[in-house]
Length: 360
Ligand SMILES: *Cc1c(COP(=O)(O)O)cnc(C)c1O
Image (tube, rainbow, N blue to C red; front, side):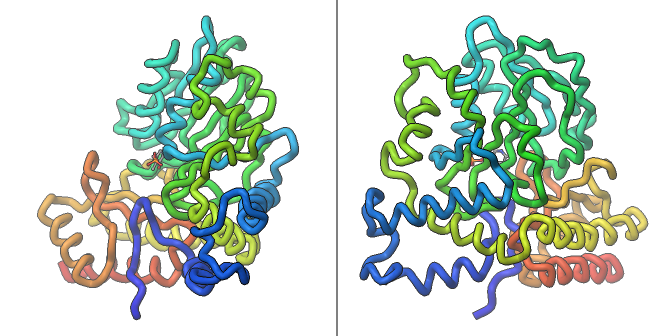
């Protein structure tokens, strides 16, 4: 069977090894005579999976004991609400960097809960770049600063995270977590829906400083209070056990690839295949992102006319490429090349782009 040339933005390609491992163990998980989906979430066998996922994440990102690792549900989108509900207190202001559609959505939810303002924005520039955040513009009594490390829809990515802030820094890393080494100490909280770089949809990873937990009010609904999940090792209610199992397999795969340094090198090579084709196309392909803000995860581009773009997408589909349409809100083309997308598939796309250009 041929695996598809999958460039979906999310849910997205998973490492073939992880899928095969799941297949091998599907009916009889580690001699239990049951699928991992059929295990009690209170059983020792499941607990081992849950704890392995946590400890692999802890070691890949060098996360110290000062941080909790939570496995939640509701996607990154529920975090847009939970963050202000738990961490934005009466009389405080939260600051949001507007770098794309997901950042806008995060801000919209914060405004429903309390006082939230735009710290800096690249909206006027059609989100082509990551703006500079001037740390001195953020008051030291602010609740937190929120950034979106990779803008999935526009194809931009922070290259240097803001420094010099005296307030907690929170990042939505849904579309680039584990794409490269991270200095976790720079962040008080990061979070990611799993379906781009971590596993299947249904699990959301939240990594947060324990001291932030003190902010949550007891009057919050139980399931929306981070303390509930922190106190119960994310087992207050039934967690998405199969998703966490697949997450543990993906984390093993990342570890076996040589960890985040090796993953970063491979991601840079993959991205440069496509960006080189764009840059050497004499304007046939136009990259959306400015050069210093280009994402290694989502490569966004247009062709010179609607007609050329349509023809490109139709021929690409014919040739077996999946998921190259840009997000419905921006149009054009987007190739999502997350960790699990094989180098060879990106090479084939770059070749296809080159051939299409020459033949068009
Ligand atoms: C996909 C995505 C989201 C939304 O994630 P859900 O899990 O569907 O809620 C949020 N932020 C970013 C940066 C994303 O890429």
